[in-house]
Length: 458
Ligand SMILES: Cc1ncc(COP(=O)(O)O)c(C=O)c1O
Picture 1 (tube, rainbow, N blue to C red):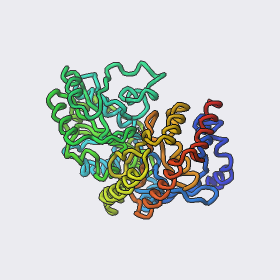
Picture 2: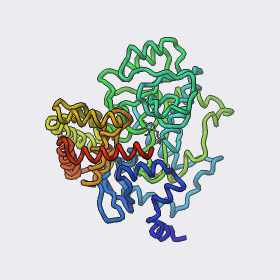
Picture 3: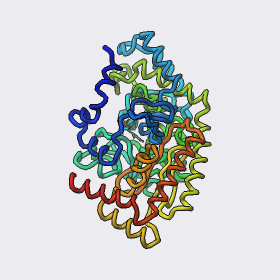
Picture 4: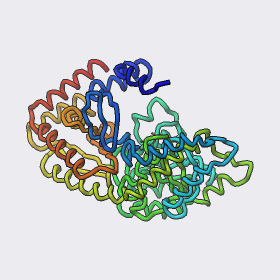
């Protein structure tokens, strides 16, 4: 089979195939917002489309490509593994590569988090973490944060704080309750019944880009200890250097009982994730030989995935990417804050390291206010498309809208970005913001047309 020829021959049918067989509504959305480019390759922070145009990828596959696309070290490890034909997934057996990756994760994980259960995705890591917490504490209830995102399978969805994802799936797990993020008083109220298995949180919320306030995580640790609740950090997105530390909880020197990871560990090559727990939790879950499969899966310890993880950790270390992410995060933040000072609708930059949200808000000047109100009355989710659409169409920069009803654009570049790449983005954004701050103008009329088109076709 010549897979490359097959792909090259059928590539022009990409969107038709996706419309017919994969997700017709997503295909429509991509076409309507002009994100329907066909990409043919990716390297580092760049994608190349079928017209030969290079696109700066400030989305990184939702945080998968921390080491950049096609990293040569990870790619070589993948080739080497396939050539070596290792005896992967024997199942009734123990894999060496899984042992090595677990050892490497235990070395970089905070405190005594040293027991590793491997998964194949972020949501599966969260499911595992919730099950471990229930089994270890023999309690049922889970507390989570408003606006939290932990994945979309039913358990993870039960601790998801966004109505648009929950709706049409209810009833979800009945024992889950939400509290506001960064609110220790509300958390204490929720935990004080002493029947809560876990408090699960993102140290930087992926949807809102809100960061754990100083002292919050230490307070969470203390409350969890007081009420016998396990502290579960979801580092699926924030892990592996994204926020300028290996894990985001490291900013506060707080050690959770369980940590869920995934995304960047894959290097973008083979899906992989992990639940990393303390020996105390693990010993309660896997407490006798009968319970060696107290939680299990088929693909979790696959050799290719394990090798990808080892290669990613090697690259993060040898290229000093965690410190680089911190430095580039500061650089981008300074550049973005200069734009906040310059443009009245760009209100605030939130986030940490290379996980940043650009918060837009209502302008003061009369003309812009009219435009702002008009667009929001047509569709509360449209404004940010005025930023992301021209960023891609005119400047070849790929970004995303952070979530529903929040006027936040999110950037999540690879940790490998250079100052030149950061400048490329800042220059592009400056130009887009300039045209968006001209009302009436072409930016406003094109988004108004988009609103009319989507209203007609939805
Ligand atoms: C914090 C967090 N947890 C869990 C998930 C779910 O991961 P996955 O999409 O791999 O299931 C995500 C995905 O974006 C995430 O950001």
